[in-house]
Image 1 (cartoon, helix red, strand yellow):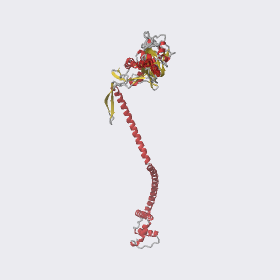
Image 2: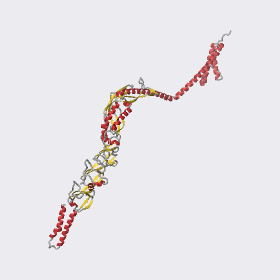
Image 3: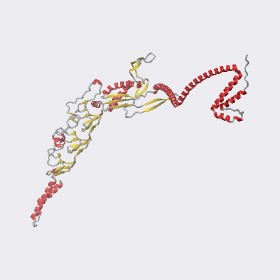
Image 4: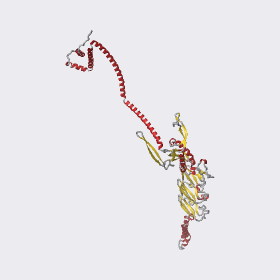
Length: 606
């Protein structure tokens, strides 16, 4: 402005005043005056030109604040839409824009930059001017669908009923030209609903809804939707139709939503199966049984503390059974259906609060009632001696109602699990949660109750093991015997042949003995006759001779060389006897022997 005044005064002075001071004696006085007037005119034109254009660079825009010639804004307006003095509703886009005296009567700010909304972000708008909000209205109505983002133009916004204050319409990722005189913008994160979850909406506005997967016109009425059946004992959950103020009946499906976080609060509810574990916080004891080499059983008590994990829903449930305190671990599988998610949020707050404040106390109470109470169970019918009654080889069963026993936690576990599950399900449904299953963990039964049974089992197993070992030993001996027999097969065959040969030899010897006996009997008979003729002595000598002759004959037949040697040296020891042959020699020798024998005495004959 100051520069413009200086240039304007200088130009006018040169154009109108300066020519009067040109000396008259100057030869080119007329030319000098013309030159001064021309120079003054150029300066005046330059002064006017410097205030009559706006140049805006790329990525920027210009805002205009009018200072002169527009009149006053009325009615509490902040942004001028009809040329009033003050912030102007229009902006100047990038480029060169001539406008007479625009810089003279306005303050033009060309440093403004476009507003950039990045991925996963959104822009929260607040209008500084417009129609006041209605009573009880927290956020301005969303932009009309006919205008859309054209409502960002201040003149369009203000002339079409735009409301002052926080806007329900948000800016999605992109670039925007926002007039700072009308708009304040705040960058926030878009709201995500992850896979396996639904988003329960608590709305602070009563308006039309268009969230992509969830849309609805502005409801005519917003009465609370009542429970299906109040006699069920369900929690009171003030749920309203979509578009009303309050917790909506329908939930958002998984996805990304560009909605005003202060107008719509999204509570994610996990619709996947939840596992609630009740474990730890007790001491587990065991009695270890040891067997030495002699088969004697000894026992030793061992205890360890079972700590409670921070990931567990709660510690183990302590139940009173037959006078014993038994810590019982269990696992509960629960799930919230998408249609019941709003009930959970409106009635309790969150799934964690349902677990801690509602279901955990109910689960603990029900488990204690079932474990410490009575229930129907099938047992074998017994006689007066306590023995099972059989029918067709099977025990006859009967259904009886009796108190729960400690060992039922092992022997009747499915029955107890089913009873606990049956009682828990309706309690969970009151809190809009579905129980899928209940499973008992390994019970920490006092070891004193189990040691007698385990000792009996161990003794039985030892007895069976002894019998099996004895049978194995017998089989091993039989196997070794069979192996040894196979290894000595050739010897056994020879022995068997020998046995058979000995039987044959015995039979032959028997036959030979019988023949010899007959022979001897015949010889004896002959000798008796001979003795009757020759006498006893002569008969004996004769028998000696025969035996000697036979012995010598057998010997010389087997050893002919001995005979030849005897004949060669016979002349040295015996008288000369002329014989014709070896047989003759033998006969001669024998005859000589007979000649030297005593004469045979004959008995006198009558």
